Image 1 (cartoon, rainbow, N blue to C red):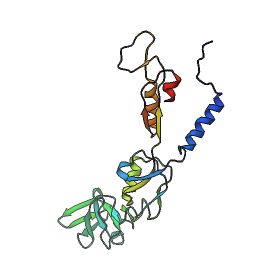
Image 2 (cartoon, one colour):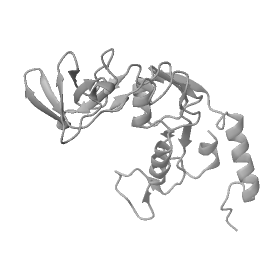
Image 3 (cartoon, rainbow, N blue to C red):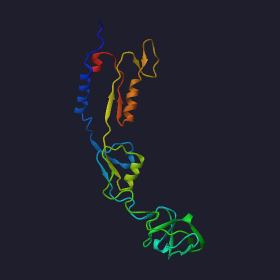
Image 4 (cartoon, rainbow, N blue to C red):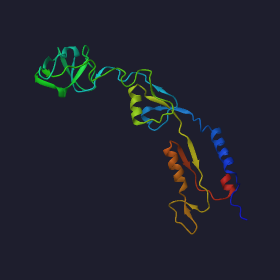
Length: 231
């Protein structure tokens, strides 16, 4: 009878040997490395990352409009608009600009009636903090931005940058090697003869390993003989 397998093992034993070999080589506890945040898309964090500064780190306007003192707007309504003077009662402000000292609210420019140079009317009172982004609204200094074991997304990278993290500790990419074996296998670009097939399984391994974050390596085809395989 022709011997099909070089050495046959039960599936359970083969699985055990396989995972033991992976564990011995540190596959399940990969080392970490520190890389630039802007190069970390798709990488997996090896430790929690905390905010080095609050985000935002200053009070800023969430809208284009006018910054006002909310108490000075009390009483404004549709049938009794309130007139404000630039510099004394309000200042123009754009989205993201720091809120000037002494002002505590923003009224959207769409809700302001500009009367002329330096004067506007409003038709509704503003409340303290209206359309204002407070310090630490997204993250407070020391707060966890991303946990350990988190696969970094574009949004997470932006959050890390905004909280002062320019580098991040990530798990090293696992490395894997695929050895295609079979005397009938030929390179994809080869002309095929009777009984010959193109070697394609390596591309399945390579593709999935890359999708899972690994660094695959494919070796040349080896024929079905114990000596070449052992070498």
